[in-house]
Length: 98
Image (cartoon, rainbow, N blue to C red):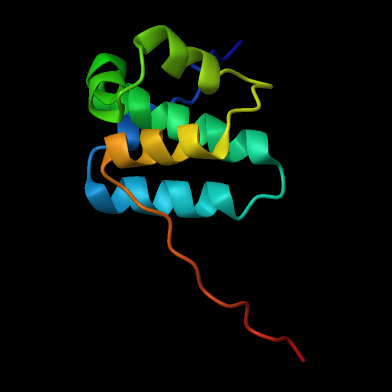
């Protein structure tokens, strides 16, 4: 018997401010910056790309390009998108192990 699985889509689970904050925080902890960009893209899809483009002051096409796999968006672009999403980055010191 062959089992079929559908591809996991995080967008379906990004339905609260707490889920979005946790998702972005976890993605930012990954060493690969593409993981964080993909997470921002997922949140933008969950919120509606057109609405995020408008609230961030970016064109919809520019938003898609900035969040495309392999993109290297400018720092100010990422900040505009995060503000458009209604989130802000926060920082904490690493706990010394040992």
